Length: 362
Image 1: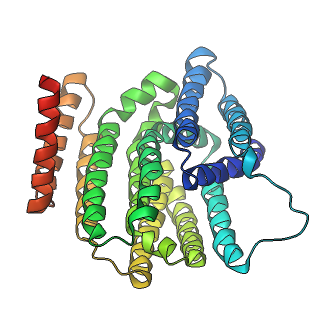
Image 2 (image 1 turned 90 degrees about the vertical axis):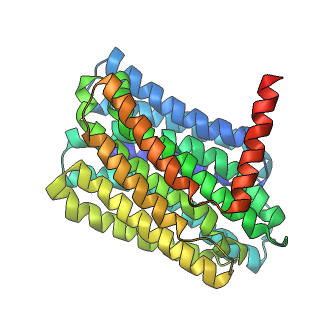
């Protein structure tokens, strides 16, 4: 627990740097931090388990080293924005907007550490290692989320006042959910194989939570799009309240289900908390900044991904069978996904695919 708490300051620096780089359109640095951090975590799982074959404590010690490295790298990337004014020049409006966003960033950094503390308290230290290793495999989903967020945020701020821009937003929402769902289902099918490769037999029991954790990230990330009304209305204090409520619900569910169902109960708690966050963000975002979102596609994709992902985790192992099951699940996903696109969106997709096919022929 001491090691976990030591990572918090570096996590705060890292998260704030991501926010600054995203808002200032520094996409390359943003992606280096996002993708580099995920890859580094996968590497330490591999090194600490297959090469050294250590106790679980070394995994967290190496994790702390990664946080320190990326904490200092984050400081370097945002050094031009770090100033010490002689007198306070920040307006009240900026404080009312920035302070809640800063606290939201802090909550986002603290939440993974809280999850690990709850695992340690409600289950045991061995389960903590299993959960941490499996959660790092699920971080592969954040690569897609980070890449999308770095592109969508500038697009949102530059286009939200345009006429009929909601058509583009709905189209992006559908494409985003379909693409991310494919990644989540792939992890559901091959998460155990990836964990076995990266972590070895010692951590293979943790594979059971790879899909639930990936699903919770998927659910939370949808709010990036349909919860934008809160940001556009500058009511960031409301977003902070939503984050606090969802964190409280997550911790409560983890405590309730963790003691009975182990690390699966912990993962289920994160899903419930992120579902509450998504619902509240969608509702208040629509109240504060009404837009014609096609909300129905969201529960359809979440339910479909949940059913197919659960099935993929329970079909058993075997390379050929896993591949056949994944292809079958992705086929169902894509067939259902076709029904959520309207005629104009289908025509747009077809024209894009035709142009791509023609360029490949050339």
